[in-house]
Image 1 (cartoon, rainbow, N blue to C red):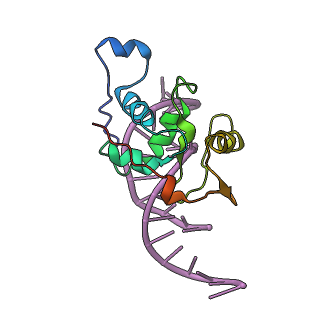
Image 2: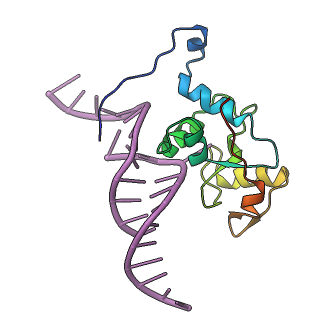
Length: 121
DNA sequence: GCCATGGCTAGTA
DNA sequence: GCCATGGCTAGTA
């Protein structure tokens, strides 16, 4: 795999938050997922112009600086499985259920209906 | 080398 | 299940 680094560094005030620019982009997208809806790691990656970066999205969500404000629990796997969560998948499912999402056998019920595709704008 | 993924394939029922 | 993916990190020198 390519080892080219090309590290992304912020030089504006936002760099003080110790989030990379890309992290910020991900969190901004998350804020566009309303309660009761979900999106997927892959969809966020596509929305940010890097369709193969779904795993990186997961890692970025894992270091979400503000789990209260930024709803990373609304991001699930492309097949409707719950996916990981800092506080555990069970907690993630509970949060989603509180927002009206149902599960059958660990899979989001009516996945197509509750799935949204946030765009960067 | 990992990894909060994804998509495709084989192989079962 | 399997393995490609790609960016970050631990750990060596």
